[in-house]
Length: 289
Ligand SMILES: *[C@@H]1O[C@H](CO)[C@@H](O)[C@H](O)[C@H]1NC(C)=O
Ligand SMILES: *[C@@H]1O[C@H](CO)[C@@H](O)[C@H](O)[C@H]1NC(C)=O
Ligand SMILES: *[C@@H]1O[C@H](CO)[C@@H](O)[C@H](O)[C@H]1NC(C)=O
Ligand SMILES: *[C@@H]1O[C@H](CO)[C@@H](O)[C@H](O)[C@H]1NC(C)=O
Ligand SMILES: *[C@@H]1O[C@H](CO)[C@@H](O)[C@H](O)[C@H]1NC(C)=O
Ligand SMILES: *[C@@H]1O[C@H](CO)[C@@H](O)[C@H](O)[C@H]1NC(C)=O
Image 1 (cartoon, rainbow, N blue to C red):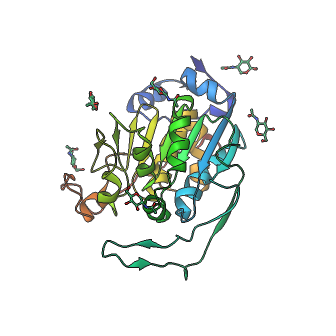
Image 2 (cartoon, rainbow, N blue to C red):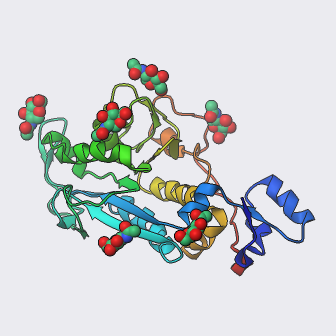
């Protein structure tokens, strides 16, 4: 289906493929093709649920949310912040044991609180579930607290997409929803994340991995790159570009770009990835062109 809305009159400037550039340069009336799913998504309310827990990583939550919050102006998005108990949830990790058996007490760290709007019983139906990482997962694993994994497993079939950032992939793995799939997670604690699950193809060099309805990203800031790719997938590039540009964010658009897999010596990493990199060219939004 093709549309030619006024706002996309300069869509040649945002065309993302060589083919589109070539077409645009020969055509005085550029068009941009949205998929039927993108048209449908632009026209409905998406119910997005973020699962949080004490010791969540701040940017795993607020990085991707910055894009979703901006896009909730042109599009209808409902956000639920979901935790074991509704109310304040802090970023300060609860104590956990280190491999040598001593207690790691992080109580001197600052505690950035957010408010969970729902618990696992009251959470509304979700189209998209997002699972952040954070050091707090060590405490939950140690306590055999599977409330989050149970929630993910119970909601997986009825959500259209499930995303994780950083060690959030460990929750998905423990919930069983990565079985038979390709996935990635933070390279900083790769061994921890990839110990879970039985038949998961962990991708050692990946900024993010898309496998059907499941998108998993590498550590922390990788969640922002995944989210940029994800919202472009949801709504189409030109509907997203001005928000990315207003944030002055240079998103990595190649999911295989992962120098951190080299830096952290992840087994199986593509060692020919250089430790320096450029990011994608800017994609002007028509109004800015
Ligand atoms: C958008 O919503 C309107 C009103 O519900 C509907 O008539 C139209 O068919 C929808 N368009 C798409 C592309 O889903
Ligand atoms: C979005 O959330 C609001 C507040 O919880 C609710 O009133 C509304 O029905 C929701 N809309 C959809 C489409 O789920
Ligand atoms: C968690 O489960 C393990 C293995 O079953 C057990 O050894 C450990 O004591 C449990 N920890 C807690 C806090 O219940
Ligand atoms: C989800 O679907 C799978 C495959 O059909 C099924 O085995 C599983 O029981 C379902 N899970 C839930 C919670 O309904
Ligand atoms: C493991 O996952 C692959 C897909 O990656 C699938 O083809 C295979 O059947 C699975 N094996 C088992 C034992 O479930
Ligand atoms: C490894 O990385 C290099 C440099 O980015 C790239 O050219 C090559 O295709 C990658 N190899 C694989 C198997 O992905």
